[in-house]
Amino acid sequence: MDWHPITEISQLDDIYKESFEVPCLIFKHSTTCPISFAAKMRVDDFDSNQSNVKSYFLDLLQFRQISNAIAETFKVHHESPQIILIKDGECIYDESHLDITVSELISQIPTT
Image 1: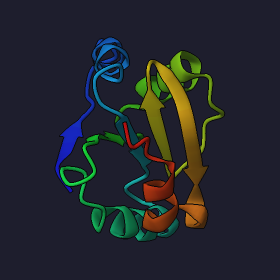
Image 2: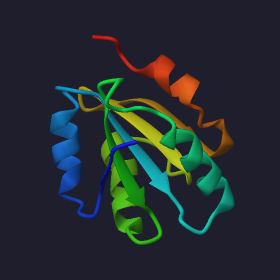
Image 3: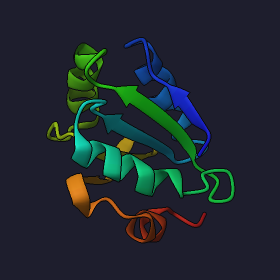
């Protein structure tokens, strides 16, 4: 997985704009949670380059304010861990905890 870290709230504007060109995946991760660790291991098996998805990573313990902004910007309920797939400025898929699977994620990615 080719992760791009989210460390500034201003990056959400970039992700919003970029999602009109390519689907954008955000993975919100709690670095102290074993469930989050297990979900991250699953998502790490996803090849974002092959699927034409730009992938972003948020350490929500370090950047909780950004996590809250993600929930507000993309109109999703905050969860941890959580994956959020953004296309054309909107969340088209989100999942959390052990329901995060690569096969389900792949099935949600638009083909065009």
